[in-house]
Image 1 (cartoon, rainbow, N blue to C red):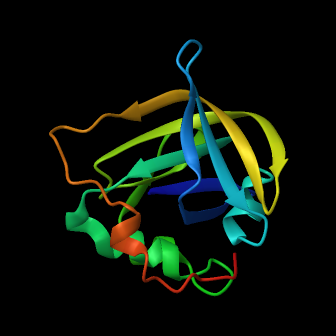
Image 2: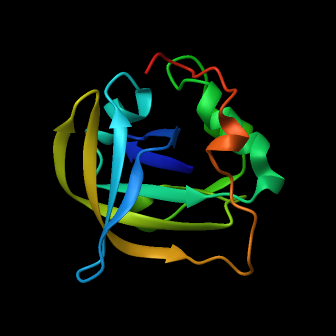
Image 3: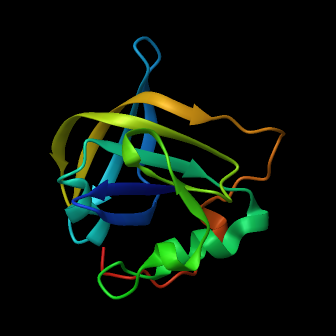
Length: 146
């Protein structure tokens, strides 16, 4: 599971994402699917970059907050520690690893829109972590319908 962040027009947004994958080795590419009903999707529509974060299970509460709340009703960034990264993309300080990718293309994928990213900066994990997986969040009530 990934937490994806975006910023456009001075509005920061972020959500929990399950549809994401490496898409190419050379050149490096990563694919993120954002639900069209999601606040983060609407902010990302005006963004040039996305932040992609993985979390250790020690910080499961941050992941659960990004998955169970909607930016339509709360400011998630008031409830966690973060800083501005490459291209002013919000970077979550509790993430075990993260990267920022420039959005190269957007395309429809049913009820999600794919964002093809070219990594431009990031921070790899410092040690082997116990990554948050679907099993850790399967009981979440999403902040919006899928």
